[in-house]
Length: 136
Length: 209
Image (cartoon, rainbow over all chains, first blue to last red; front, side, top):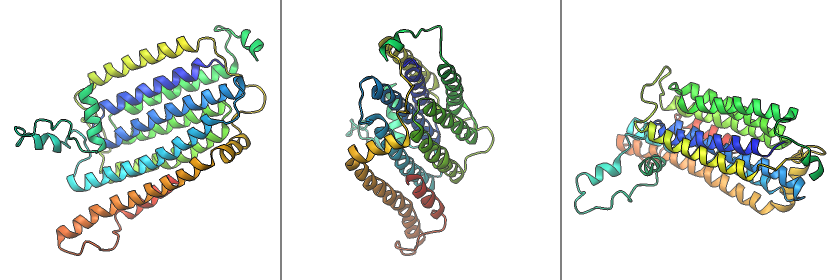
């Protein structure tokens, strides 16, 4: 099999997930797009592992081991992410990441003495998406 | 192997390549629908198609163990978790007009630019590279297990610690909101675990296993 097939499919899936992360508003849809990106990386790892295990006679199978680790970490990530989203939904009544603008609200009232509030975003995944959108 | 690779051509794809291409088209189309549909539950169900298609691609790449792990963990539990999350955040069943945010065109520009750059670089780099799929499977359960437990034991054990930490973290995140609600309503914060967050935590536990 030509190596370009899985590599191109992986690149396209990754960019689809990238679009989803940037364009979606619901936090759970953002998590789905993150899963798409992780799966694209997994496909790349498996394809290159199969290629290298024959061509370079590499016996570590590092690509497949890393794929298993990525799958496990993705499962942990989706658990934690959904717990965060559910906690946010329970506290705020919404799961839309556009409405979670605590940092923006904070730099509205006391924005005069606190000019660098753009960098003071909290570690929430919604703010990561907002930051990605801001850089886009 | 190099002799066999030299006889390949772009215009004579093998059966495996045709199957990979067709399943890849289905997978990519399902991924597109996943990120563009306005019905939230349909997005999760199209994600099942995407992940199942990726499992078939793993099988075509002779990585059977990864394929079944993909089916078990992603299709089996991650999508169920996402559906639970959609249900618990009271996602609307029909079309939701605000599924996409306002800067969709900026996101589309970024994604298309990244796709064009990545595809160009990848095709240019691996134009003359072929995967040899004959012989014993490179990703059979025996090969994967042997390499995993011979060379990757320490990361494997570290991963179990990470899963434990994620499990405890998910429970703590679920309980903390409840304790705050309990203090808001005037009762003691160290109350018992509520019934509302229990199925989520339990299914998360299944997802991390």
